[in-house]
Image (cartoon, rainbow, N blue to C red; front, side, top):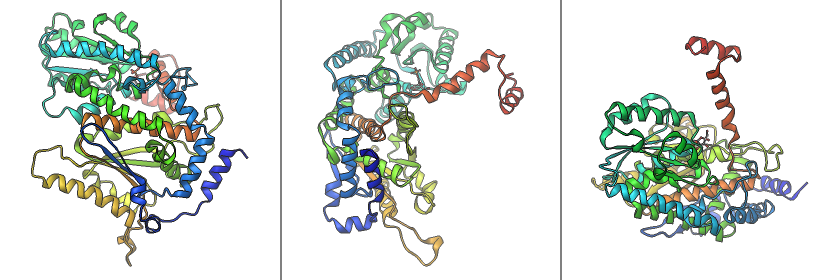
Length: 504
Ligand code: F6P
């Protein structure tokens, strides 16, 4: 038996005290498992005390991390080594925030300078009046911008941004309806500049501009891509192509030129604060060892629930309307990164990999799905995310009720409530973590996202998998292409559906 297998068996064999017992046994538990990260304009408190992590688990998980060469893989990530082994590429998203190998940081800074110049030129009116931006992209080229803009640019954005991802024309039509073509720019965001949904939507946006009387539709297009040659070939003027490095993965690309609409909406200074918030977490992750390392601590708890206790899902509830898109963002980050079943050396993974990430917004979700969290037959570890400072200017009662509900749900999940009537009893001992932001500043959002990136990476290291490829998305695309090409026979069900919809 190798070290890792022995450690996993030892972890599995540990006693399982309840949360109540853990708190009773250690009066300092809250302090030991609640840690703040300080940022410009307010910090973030990460409270993992309501999880079942205890000293015994932490000690074994630290040994597992060492056996899985956590320090070596982390150093390789920041050094710009080819950590994405299946594609022979580095993963240089931290360099976009200024933390990484000098050569990667320098390249990122040069590309940011180019992006800033375009943002400043647009703000200065050098491209004429720009009131709207239709940002066309999908997956990692859309979810990050949509989240960041919804979180940070609600109050009078400098440019009104509409993110369109879906190929369903209803999505693009809604953006057209909200924009004045004469004052609209179109950003085509695609790492590969080949994604069929994005390229089809981009073509339709050009048609819309042209049919609306815009003289030079291509002159209104900005391309955000790691394939600048393809963008130029497609018709975008080189001066409006904002490249980013091939080594920045799609779901990690918000920090690169894919963040252009964010910078346009909130301004460059705020975008720089957003990057710096993420960099603060990068430095913490790179320089802190063991349980004190917050993303690694979270990954220990994730492994405890997924691998040791068979939890198949993990939920995230943002008790903040502005973070309503966070669960979708985390779904791609975690499920596309760690939804794998082979190890780094191509062997079958001996156990579950990523849980299904899901979630919603509090308090809405309380009135819809929390029944299962409190009394269902499965245990769902929950992350609660909230901000101390309100995002609204209404009666403070709104924010007070929001926060008290957030804390009450976590307390209720843990405490439970016995009762003679089983239908009315709550089992309790259900785990949660709470991430409490002082305020939803650009820096705090950057830090929050970077925390989840590193948590995802730490989970991948503990699992021994590559979080940076996504071959699982290819087969469906391939089959769609062969449907388009025709002449291929499929299974009887698919054939019948193609017939029924007129596609065959
Ligand atoms: O299909 C999955 C995926 O490749 C994601 O990883 C990526 O974020 C998305 O598609 C969009 O790809 P692109 O930015 O190349 O258009």
